Length: 578
Image (cartoon, rainbow, N blue to C red; front, side, top):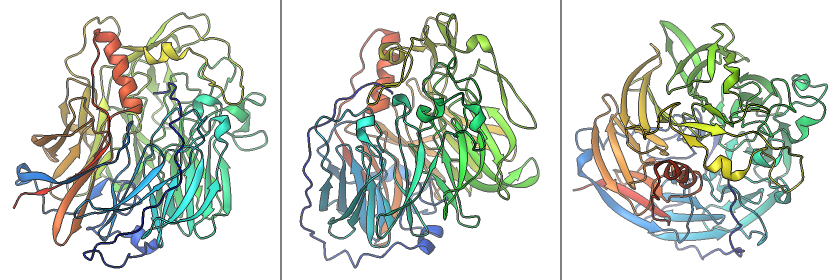
């Protein structure tokens, strides 16, 4: 989670000569039109489409034949730590990123390496989250944001570095892990660092030149709307990180971003709502102007980052057609917002895991009322609350299937946390700015209040009907779940995320487990699907580490033994047996 990791050794910039197979044709430039209406056979961006669905229309692999799925090829990245990026595919070219600031181009059909790029990293840099969540494709370029807070443009066919722009200050422990968002000639990124007093922001850069177009901060300054929700100058180091790719509505030209927790964690020094932390914000892509917001956790004290961007879904809610923005919150509620027009409005919220901290939610505004004895703070001693610091769902993305009409959540239930008395903290550049000892955070997991024994299940994959607000099915695991989800036109849901190293397929309508295969490490990567020469493939990166490993340590602390999940990254690609 938010522990400390020493920076990996310095990597020199290195590009292997392109060795494009004869089976690969000319690289097809990625245009706005293609991103708006992506072809079924490709996976052009982080979640497959701008709306963030994590859905592939491909239907060659179905709930009837998925049992015949077998490994087509595998590729070892040579890197350890968490491999979380999706395999991005454009007409037979695959691009993955890894820890160590690498981009690897592969032939999607065979796994043959075409080129590899390594960003040089400062040897003395402290890495809190040594990972990367993927690339953006735009034109004939590949864009990657790096853990030392830079944005890099590469030639898609050769891996040649075209330009590098500094986005933030790595010496202040600003870093970037997200996959950039490409739209209308701009490449958008955001900065992590909420535990180091970073002031969160989204920044856009010209896709051709790399020049900065705009930068919008996520903590409101005095004189700005929301500026009165921060006392004094606390907004300057107030958190609100952006560390997951936004979603985008081309019809309104609005990008939707999730923001992280306020800093430091104790609330005594920052009375107020602390806008726009713990929120969804919408930004005009042309100007960066903040158009609207919805805050899930005013004055957050529980580290409930709401960094996942909402999925943009046009559906019915209780018989009424609604353009929704749907978000499974770290606070344990499934939030349904109305995004019609220029403003986000509350529609409904449903608890999808146990929450003993939010007393009620206003049915008109959606504002939560907290049970104050569950708020950690000065003079309270140890405070127990549910869900845990890791939330009902962390950064791992949900998925939506337009054929089933169901919304799928990788959830963690029955997991709570305990925080001790806060300790005084002052901002110092390059230091942590939390308010609690790291050890207390990493060992702060607890079972539900009053329970001594481990629950029978923790991790879940849940399916929800947005039209009724009802849960349709849930598959439960004895271990926690850190698995991003993919759903397909073949009535399937794919996901990993458990410490047994399994990657699985479920019936998207019923939740029945249909197929599973062991991988070399645990799967915390984002799965994708693509087609080459008439064959459908399912791709995912296996590579356990970072927050999943730290959460495992918290569970191990409770159960009294150590769980070992092998390290090492591998790209795994599957297809049907012939």
